[in-house]
Image 1: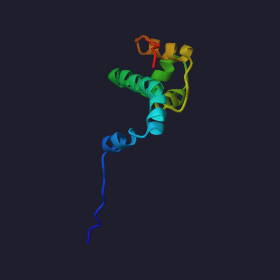
Image 2: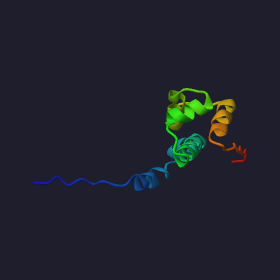
Image 3: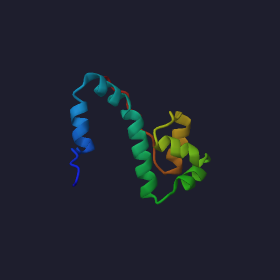
Image 4: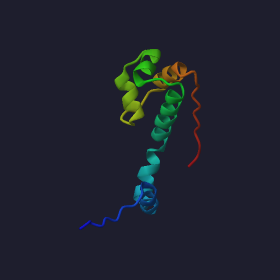
Length: 98
């Protein structure tokens, strides 16, 4: 006999969780790091580069790229500039009121 499980998608789960003020505040805190990681991954993949290839072009290690893409590091602007240059892109920082 099959067990029935009540699975929901991540988006459905997130929609429910985001109603909790604490969860939303913590989730929103991660948005800048998420955007950096997402944009970096997208640019790297668009150029058909591996993490190791990007690291070599940026004169850093593959583990550094991995940590940034995995949101396990807080990069300096200097490092982001090196990566942007290696990806033939530019950094655009926006400071806005909340």
